[in-house]
Length: 590
Image (cartoon, one colour):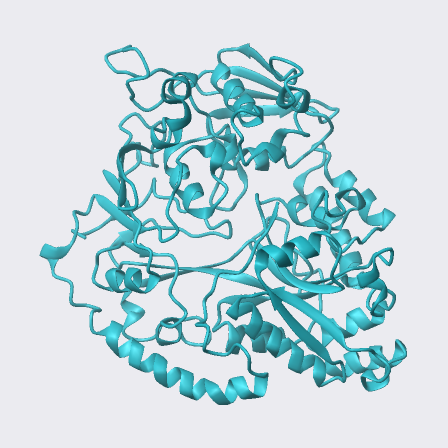
């Protein structure tokens, strides 16, 4: 679970520091500049010769943020998550609908108490060839066993590993906390039954446990490789995934090669992956990355600099000419943008303004926000209005039947009147703090103007994001901007933000909302004896209560957008933002 700053998609001199009206007046000037940029980059579109293209069995993409380690125990940021996803597998994985699917485990069951999970492993999965293994059956590799799963999970919880994924298992698996503290030599809740069977005991029922295992921290690694390479395992990763490492030149390129013994096959029985190599470069300038993409040097581009975006996309997010030759992939991200409101009047920040005391004031702020206008004119179509509660559309369990807030300024004014602030009179000026980011500033300026139209005056305060996040968690702010990005595709990961035991700073509930009904429904939904539909029904009840209480001003869900070359086939994009390449192929020399 993590709060994240937004990535910058708009240039810093575009709309930051102007009101909504000034923004729309300046849009013409800004777009004129973008047309000039568009002319520059359009000149390179469609002029790539076949001789300049890489072989069709090589897939190339760029990672401007770089990669520090290929150890899945350290995969806490997107570029590392993508790269380790090419190299490793876990017990389970996500299918194309983001449902849990078998992977190294062919099947599993949970006991009636909901705490003991038993996994049955495939016996035909091999680790990548590597000198750390003695030769058997003519290769330097060996089959995966249940002992490898035990070792991998214990390694995440080992204090010496210093894994960024410790939180995923430390309080969930029985004995993991004692093992982390060095009080025992192994995790008592993990038992190897035989080479193909492992049993995991949880501290309490937790239905999303399978979803947690789909994260990089659930990857299976061999003890031999970790012991041979030690602290350099992240430079010499050994897994079971569709690709294995071939070479890595720091800050230049990472090359992966096809795993010839990968256990998956397609519907016709052909062994995956189709590609022979994946080449990842580390060009830091995303402007140059996009230019290289238009010249055919990359097969996918995963982000476009804000200076280029208006020349590439229409306001509805569709492609402009001449970029329609590329394939556009869109998916609502598993994230939500919101303004949090501190409800705990034990804190001075909550007592200083009437937001915590006046639920109708919080509701009025929500009804006064025109989310569609923000998504269209500020985000250029790269967002989905958050009008159905907490869960994003791409999240399993999302329901459009959960009614959130729509733009209704008349209703907002009526609520203000009922709250004792007719047309905003008597309401002291509010302060909205946000991180120092042009995109979030432009959204906040739009919202500020919308609130002013119903009589609510709000001052915007921008600070560096680390300081901002520290203040949020410490309860020093009455209202603030942040976002939540799901760690795994289960509604629990979002609804946990509204339970009493998760109060910040020890948990993600930064608003300090506390209602017995929310706590009860959350706990009920954790039991794995329930069907997913039964769990989702409880989450929907939670969402309706949350909307009614309005601890957030709901804004929008981000939209993921990728461009691929026209000859790339089998590329998919879902709300998790994964970069899956095992079924990708290039139909012509690329």
